[in-house]
Image (cartoon, rainbow, N blue to C red; front, side, top):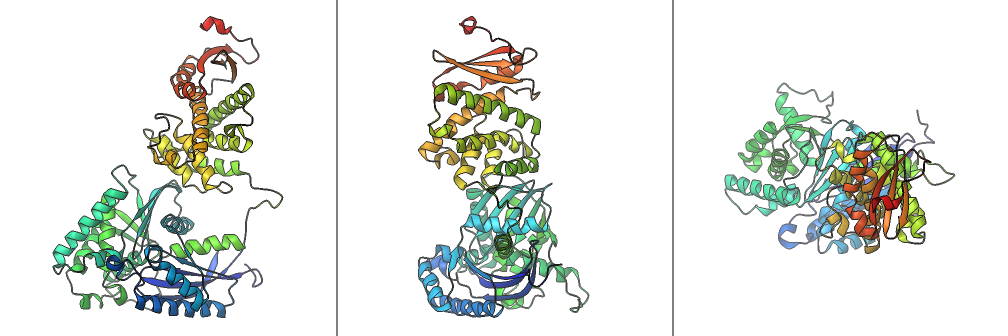
Length: 539
């Protein structure tokens, strides 16, 4: 058990569209923490933004006062690290910077505005720390007052992050002038459906389980708990809604039940905080429509979320673990961990990687390209990573596995790799088959012109290496490359004629021809060390 001298006090403040919340914890070196204070104030900072695009003056004044008070509370606990994050309302408001300046001047706090993607990642980190996601296709949804972040994960690794301009406060205000409740609900449903189509589309993964974080989810779980426990609840025995499960049919029923009663009656419902009574209907619609759209029937509520993810990140900073102080981390170790997490076919990926690196090194030597960007040692490691991970998308399905590989890699946040490096690795893996790189492909278009050229060369080599293990038999023992008179001869060493593997490589060599301006030819060279067949025999 950690001693008092080993624990550190940390605090996190989340400035949201609907509320501001402070959490103070005692963190331990093992990554765990003990909650010692939790303060929440509903300030409705984003109220009215649908019409004005600005933070309301009254809400700003209230929020600044709340933040100053929360800082005093954190200071009273002598926290070693305090971090403040702002989300949708501050991010989108035209007077957001003025609010940040006011908070700095009057409360002595600097608010870090995080992106929707970072919101999703923090919520996902919280869920992943609480549940074993390795055997699930899951969806983590963080529903706030102004936006919704959706993280799709496969075998515990992020595949996609969707950002939707949907929130309980935003949707409520958007249709607040419609007096007829039935019509208002229909308009809200249609709005949510249109946003889901626009931002997620039809080609999405249907998860086995949806995990929900945020006040709307916990409120629905609280109401469900009270409704399903008709006998008087003994308040001396506190209950928890972490992990509480609901079916889509119940979410839909609760929406219908809530929308049929006036606001005053809603405010008296057990489990529903009066501060949330006005926006709970819109929140329930978003959840129910989302569950229907992605075809998931079970919702599991997580009573933590962005703040928990932020605290876990902070704990990792103050208690670094598994770090080799003598040098940089072994990045390839994390690459292999990702491959294992995605149930990669290890023998095939290792074989393709070995052949790809043989071709790559020989091309650099014979083309005298050591000074070129694609031939640098740092790029070699990225190529090796892309080759090892090229097939991890199989964990989702075969048909589009090259695209799934891209998403799994680019969202992986493997330690030691920059975002640019992850994009290069992901693009190399994505183009190991099917379509060649095109500027209309978003993942390729966002690269610099130099990085596009790097990806094209690496992917062209990877295609040939992948073809040389077409039968997934690891039959090819070695490949020798010789460049002569505009032709690249690939002498394929194997104990017997690797006819299928040579066919596979030749079939995928068109990109190599375009990129390197060399005519690729393939020939069986029997065992390594035996003399190769004369190139003229292929003329």
